[in-house]
Length: 267
Image 1 (tube, rainbow, N blue to C red):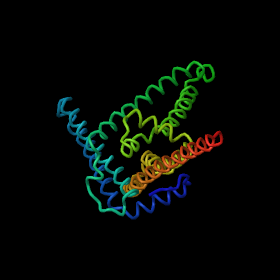
Image 2: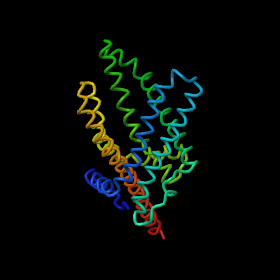
Image 3: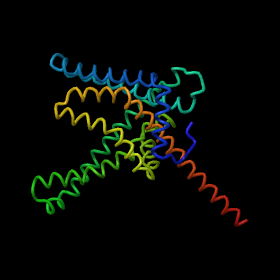
Image 4: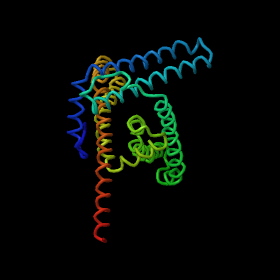
């Protein structure tokens, strides 16, 4: 159980690493299943797209999406169980997402991408006239436009990323989960960015090696990413979420205490 409301990045890494080592095989089972679902769906899409009509292809896509969603949410619930009830007997029912949680997650994800689409469109429409004046050349225009849109969208991504944890941990609806994620991440955006960047370096490095045709090194990094980075990242994100929740619970309790003290002074 995470009780500290102000964990440093070093402490978050340390907690995530200890949990990952202790429960490595349980976490790896989930990541293996996710990998198999993702790989199989990609292979099926490549093989069957030319052999099946669009209706069957869409149906298979929905089936794979639901399967991936259920397993991914199950992984997150398993990590919640590890943090909260590690001393209790493990039961599979404890890590199964219910239908409401699955539905709320899917709706929230659609809203998530809709927010990004609308945000990107508004940014481009608002900034384009000014950027054209500042950077009239096409090359400079593309760079300036990327910077203007990328930075705010990354900030927005970090603020609303934790909606899935609020759905699973507090059974919130889609709008409430996105709202609370935006609210709770206000004070720790930079810390979240650094953590995700640290874990994302393996993805970036692997993509760069692929582009340079360093195939064997890329394969080694993919194996490392699959068997270590994915479980460790999943645990670290839940640890950050709990840290955010604890932080705001402490802030709220301090506000309530100050109000009570103020009230007593007027008695």
